[in-house]
Amino acid sequence: MLLKRAIPVSYILNKVKYDLIYVLLVSFIVLFITDRYNEMLPEMPLTIPAFIGTAISILLSFKLNQSYDRWWEARKIWGAIVNDSRSLVIQLQTFTANGNDPAIQKIAHRQIAWCMALGQSLRGLNPMENLENYISDEEFKEIQQHQNKPLALLQLHGNDIKNLRENNQLDLFAQIQLDSTLVRLCDAQGKAERIKSTVFPVTYSLFLHGIIYLFIITLSISLNDVASYFELPLLLLISSAFLLLEKSATHMQDPFENKPTDTPVSAIARTIEINIKQLLKQSDIPEVMQTEKFYML
Image (cartoon, rainbow, N blue to C red; front, side, top):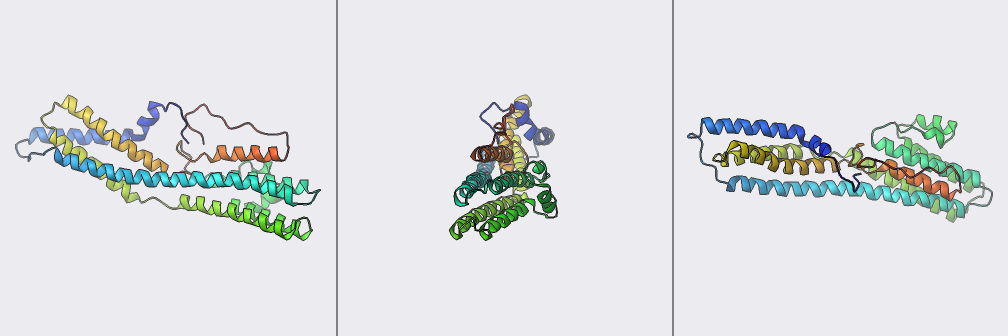
């Protein structure tokens, strides 16, 4: 997630550097054609590129709105995960009979592992990384057999809650409440996986890029009376504005790709770990995740 810090110019330029090279090539080609065959080309009024520019603005607005909706939904999902993770531990502490601190700690640490595994899995990274610090070797080996590691961890939660109920450490009402919390966690996982697996239409970006290049061509022809040393920078400046907005929307539409514009699942998982360990009154509480960069992952 981008922070309220100065974003390096290099990061901005890297987003559109190849597109700007294509724009420059197209502009040179159009300039060559207009200079060589000026008498053969029809006059291009400025109203035509202005009309195309308006259409691009509308298309960009739609894509930005849709992309932000996906990014904001991902952030709301992880906000719900924070709340339900805290609720799970508090419910265990208040609902279970005295003397069940080891069982509570086991489930609480597994919940930390679930948050980390889910974040890694959504980003296409190894979901088993560092889980051995939070779950037993037996559970570690068991979830390795599952394709969906976070789901396997939730199943272990359910088994432990069932055992507490069968051993009369939970009453029926408490079990129902804990099951509801697990259902919400499973629901949040499914929503995040839906965003990850649903691809934003690729043709939309292709068509939008094509219209931007069409805009550059028509604008270059319309400005054939302007000196090239002024026309080329103007074309690059105008096109870079459209291309940067399009790239920003493209990055936001995929909030789990391990990019600076991602939902900060690693930082959120660290916050959950801190909260849970403080609820358990443990001493090995990690520091809040800090970064010297302009973004947080």
